Image 1 (spheres, helix red, strand yellow):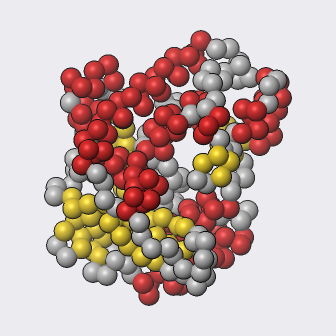
Image 2 (image 1 turned 180 degrees about the vertical axis):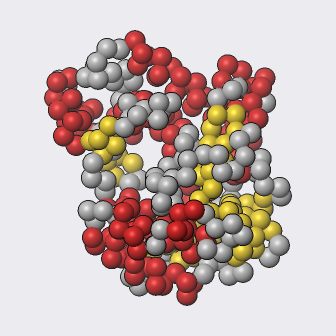
Length: 312
């Protein structure tokens, strides 16, 4: 297993957060839509102008990370960058969201949720091979493939160790909706199972997974609730991880057989997954465009391209 701290520090060495190297988002994407995984992880495309809610989430995560990061025994290197400068970098081009995050930064210390929380690790990367997670026999041909997660917060509360994830939400009404265990698992269960499985390899007696919901708009509201993971789902999760990694391997093999970016869309789109809980997929125009040349034009105009999986 890779010890904590060997993964990438985040989106930048000077700011916290960023996607995990090979985490739950990557694995969930390949299971949901092979075309989206191909474009995002196989070819390295990222939309130039993300939806405001994604920027909002990243900014609020940074505020929480700074507050808790200042309390751990070994403060992270990114604390050397002032919070205001980090928010300006994360939210570049989104002044309204930056202002909201700076207002939230004034509010968050008054909440300090959950009460009695003692931070242990903040924005920490964990990683292990599928053999270490599921056993070499079950993992088979992908036993040596490494998966990762980035934990928002590992903390001690009343003598117990918890894994906590920050989630920004915008309720339909004025206040946060009542917590619903089934809805919460349907929304965040994949992330919770993935992160809990990995972190528990490094942290003994992990009590559970907490979700800290943050209302994006003012007046700010925050609550913290345990996300209940069904025993059967947790037991089955290693099989799901293995299936996802095998699918990734298959797509990468297909990409090597294709020539030219315009043709390298080996996986067919899953048109039932175009509209998710966060709205339309960013690639919907690409997938609905029949001409290969037009797809290439859309990708060039609306997306940046970075090193794909395994090349960065």
